[in-house]
Image (cartoon, rainbow, N blue to C red):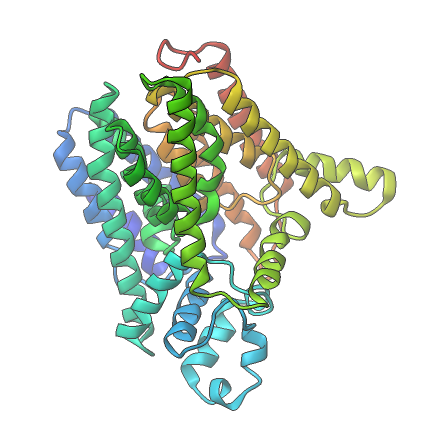
Length: 438
């Protein structure tokens, strides 16, 4: 346990982003130690306490492995000052005296990176409210902003713990399964360390799943909208609910009514939150920002990189604009297939279908940052599939791309990562446990 404290202190306060092999070594030791503790006879309550103690080590650290938090703070600052964060490019605002005359604004702008500075914000409203709340309290104090954002993430992880344990009890899985998420080095580094907002999305989503287990569908719908308004990813699971609603002991007509009322509540909450930021230019800006993920951005991809290589052989240039959209559409078809392949599914099967859906999406995606895997990782907690635990370790290999100022991905490491993940996934599909048969 002392070893883990030293490792996370070094990662949080001493590590340089360019020192990949040191990061990989520290992460490997942390992962192996954490896995040993998961399998040990140490009581669950002690390991839960350890996990949150390890997270607190990062409390006063300025993230080194990610610069996204500078944009979080920037967006919060805009909202508090009365600017709509969806309507203004940082690069344009910095041409005005109001912004370029303040040293803290210059710091945020310089640190957020050129890519962020030249694109509109796509962080959903719940995230924007949190960023604004942090700025309202901390103002120009960078460290205080960081500490406040960490506190939100820690509260979210506490919610994941409490309701995750309730769900595990409901579906008759060992409570120690929760350690796969809360003690996982990927979660500790990317959530508490690097301040990524996925845990807020996941916390609301765990509440959704708990409410579904209690047949409280309207409450679940409200929490679902909060989850998607934190990060949009959980929207992909909405079609999967149809077979779950059919499982309830109601008539076909009643199940349709339940599903429609659920989707309407989600839609109204979703629309209401975005209406606060509505402007005639909003939709175009937001679409252009999201479109970058399918037409421009690429990082740590698997199937897409194979297609990109094939495209280069035939036409001599990158066909991301075609492949990105085609793969997104294929992912949509996979989700539809999972949604209607069975007439009825229970809560256990719902978890499995969600895990398959998000796994398929990321295998077909053009961009897979390490923190993206927090969602499939937490879903795996409620199944007996282990491939996400393996992927949560191997995804750290993607950080090799940041050894220099120019992002330079290592094809061999990416190939190694996905080869092992796909083989482990395939073996679990071919030889499923009784719980995972679907």
